[in-house]
Length: 330
Image (cartoon, rainbow, N blue to C red; front, side, top):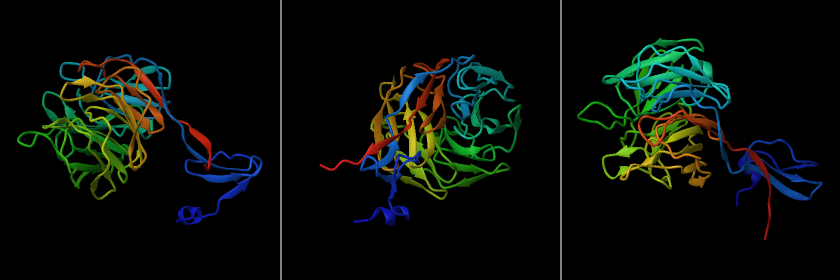
């Protein structure tokens, strides 16, 4: 049997009180004579401030207390509007250069370093726009024009896009591209091409969740990215497309909402990923799909979306705090 020292590289500490420790730390509390460890407690959703513009299918990035969304479904044919979030209220910001919807962003990273990738205007677009905290700037185009793709990265100089709806005859794409702040590079394809995929994480440790395939419709497939290739891992409990992802890495993620197809039924279901399996956790207050997920697996928010393509303004904030647990032996 493997020892803790072998796994972690050091012995279990003996401490007189419980420390403020990251997830997975183990120690012996001499005052209570108990072996303890840290893990994430059950997360909760709470209402946040309403956006100023009704929308769905937009790009986003930042954190729960400093986020941004841009574009989205606001016909015709999409929105140029951007808004920033301070943890309680939304404020209109400088517009995108091109009105579009169904584009993607990093989902996390600094609010002042966001990105809008590809999407749909009058037709599929391959445009990239970067945000510097004040304005949007058009930069190099992605190689494959697409919409309803997955995105990830940590800033507007380190991002990625994968999957999505491409031009016929392919329709569903598996293409993956990474961005270094100057140019896009094609890398390894998803194992299962799909549209309406949820994603996130750094360009070296991303995850692609669910999506839509021609048959049977909504998929439960999950794939993880290691900077070189995609690997199929454990399936979602609830197959879904157009869900909202909050992703720290390919070993720590949360996905909420989406729509199940056949049936086109919006869901409130939320699941957490620990690198091995998906676990159902607290539900969203309102069923919705095509909202924007901003932040990481343990703290973030979803904004917009709804039970129809026209979207909404509601924001829900997700928080999953660390908790100290005691090892019990029966």
